[in-house]
Image 1 (cartoon, rainbow, N blue to C red):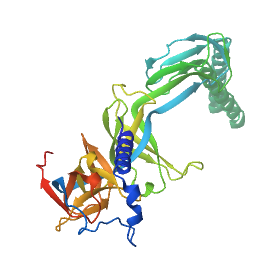
Image 2: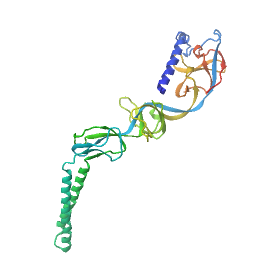
Image 3: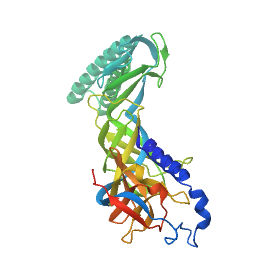
Image 4: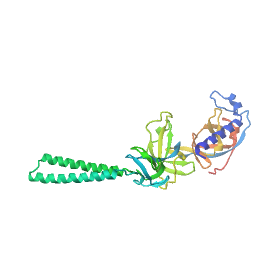
Length: 358
C-alpha cells in the first residue's frame, strides 16, 4: 500500500469516527470563535486513556507521485539510403556501443570506393610528378598547385565513399537494450528512417511532477529516495528540476537518478519520490488517535494541565511501520488514544496513562 492510499484511509477513518460521534448535532452549540466547547459544570466527567508523547526531530519530505523511466531512449536512424539486408540483434537483447544492429545492402558502394581509390592513386602520381618538374624548373608553381588540388579532391572522395560504405552498418549509439525493431529485412530505408529502438536503463530515472507551492522547496543535486509499487526503496540524486511549468498542469518535472547496474528496475513502474526539505519537530502517533473537528479538519485531541480537552489540527508528514509522523502539536502532549471520539474541546476528563510502546 503506498503512502497516498494509506493517508486517504486514515482520513476516511477519522471522518467515519467523526460522523459516529454525533458532532453534527452539537454544531449549534458553537461559541463565537466557532470552537465546540462543553459547560463542565453540567457534564459528567469522562474517563479516557492517554499516552504522554514528546516531539522528535524528523526529516520533512516533499512527496511526489511518479514512475520509472529510462534515462535514454533513441530510435536509431539510417545515415544512408538502402534496403535492409540483415537485422543482427533480437528484441530485448543487450547491445554494446557501436554494435551493428541492422545492415543495408552494399549495392554499388564497394565498386564506387574502388573507383575513387584508383582515381586518388592517379592524382597522387600526377602530383608527385608535378613536384619533380617544379624542382627542375620545367613546370610552374601554378600548374603544380592545380595537381595538388586535384589530388586533395580525390582523397576527399575516397573518404566520402568509405563513409558511405560504413553507413550501411547501423550501429547502437550507446550500451543498452534493443527494445524493438522498427523495420524488417527487405524494407527500404532512406536517410533518417529508424531501424530500431535502443533504451538505456542505467541509470534509471524516477520522474514526477511538483506543484507550484512545493517547487521552491527543492533543488537539483540533493539526495532523495523513491519507493516503488513493488515495495523496493531506492536511493538516488535529484538530477533535474524543470525551470518551466507545464502549460496545462502548472507543475514542474523533476527527475531522480538511480543506479541500475543490474538492470533489474524496469521502465514504467509506479513510484513515490521523497525529496528531503527541512528537519522539523514532529510526533509519532497511532493513526487511530486521529479525529475531525466540527469543521472537518483532521487533528488529535490531547489534555492540558487542567485536564481539559484540546483539539489541535495536524499535518501528516510521513509514516513509520504502523504509526504516523505529524506536525502542529506542542513539544510534549498527553494524547488521548481511547475515547477521543466521545469528548469535546474544553471538556474536563479523567485519564489513565498508558505506557508508550514505540
